[in-house]
Picture 1: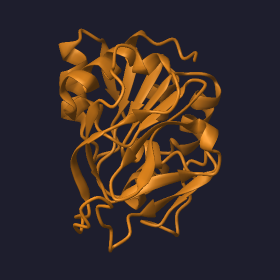
Picture 2: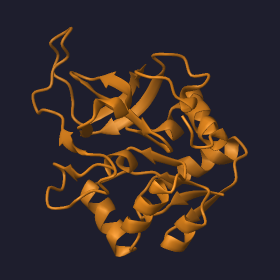
Picture 3: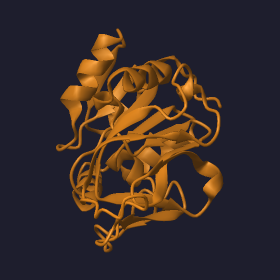
Picture 4: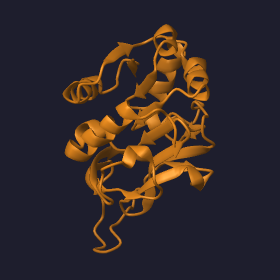
Length: 212
């Protein structure tokens, strides 16, 4: 069973619709018991880093997320579901993340410019951008290099270990778009809103056994 975790503010409907479109079985869960019986976990995220982490603490699932990931359960993090894996975020500096990965989440510079045109870029970064596949991974199967995915975010992850980065995108600067290690894959973009490429990525996750 694929568990989509509901912390009260995630974009569940789009994820549900996409999984339904590819014929995947899933369940919405919001507690430790649901996570413990899950064969795979999706943590979608929209909104604020602090809101997400406070919700996980309120629901008493912080430790369960870490335990299930450590146990080898395939995990897909989307947007905030990726950022939450790191130790901290400038969006909520008083809160610790799940700390599955060493690193931090930072805000795009206020004076971000397109290096080619010199045009000032808007924050949040919102729209379609190409993703460069830094390394091979089962979730990239049948997705062409430099495919476009849909982004909506003002913050991006800066991992301490660059070896975990498997996708990068440029928006005024090059930033981490995808991280992966063992049974974990997480993307800054929204596959559930990324049409064919996103549908393929989610189908690959459904078929994935958690091995690289």
